[in-house]
Image (tube, rainbow, N blue to C red; front, top):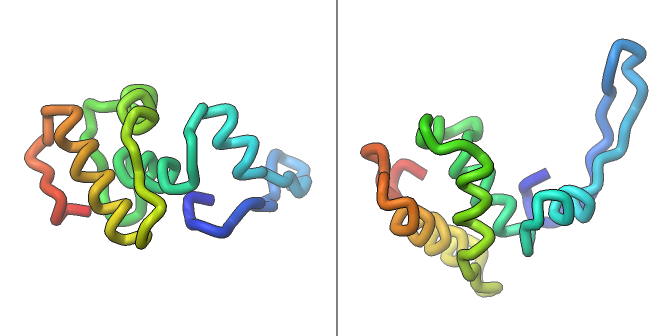
Length: 102
């Protein structure tokens, strides 16, 4: 759901495997995240398939920091890269992680 342009995900849930629809709009609202790009940065910083995140910094702390980062609407790669760098500056504890780890 963190990918731009994906606004709904339907997946089987529970024992009955009933199909449940999840909405990105609802997710952004419930997490109080201002944009899709903020959600992407939150996913990158917390944990994803490519990067383990910084283990002692949990999602709630990440969201507190990420909510306050201004992410441009310019080219996606540049704006997300800059946002990750700003995040790393904000937390002041990089856990030996650099921008190139992302």
